[in-house]
Image (cartoon, rainbow, N blue to C red; front, side):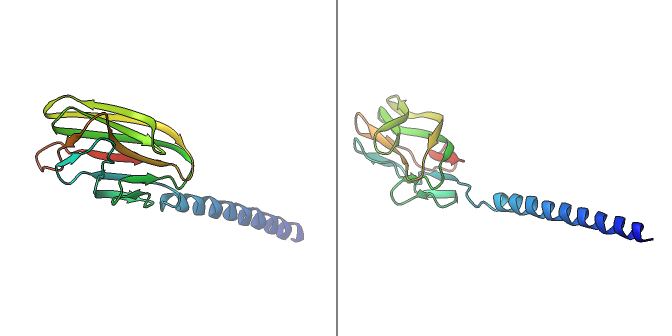
Length: 164
């Protein structure tokens, strides 16, 4: 009987250790699924706009901003966690030939897009990039004044999106 009791106690210790391990795994899964440390955003341009050369495009209507890393007032995305990010930028011009730069920290080129002269030409590009805490990513015009069509319910809408 004593050997049987020792066996039950040993099995109980093993089960408690396994339960503790499962609790640890569960808490790690819960932390990542609640978004701690994760970043994602989608923002659109809510109105037609004319832009000067070098002006930042402010995608002012936020659809998703998990992690609050995108600033709709300035049109900047500030990196809060170092890692690999994917950016997708979509444009719809409103008549002018337009060049746009997805820039990192001011002038480092991540993507350059060109929209031909004419009404409603569109472009969409994606890039995957390694970023570190504090990096600043935004879209600006380059080469000449530009314009973009904003949100129109039946049209394609300019947007900037990121996932981490």
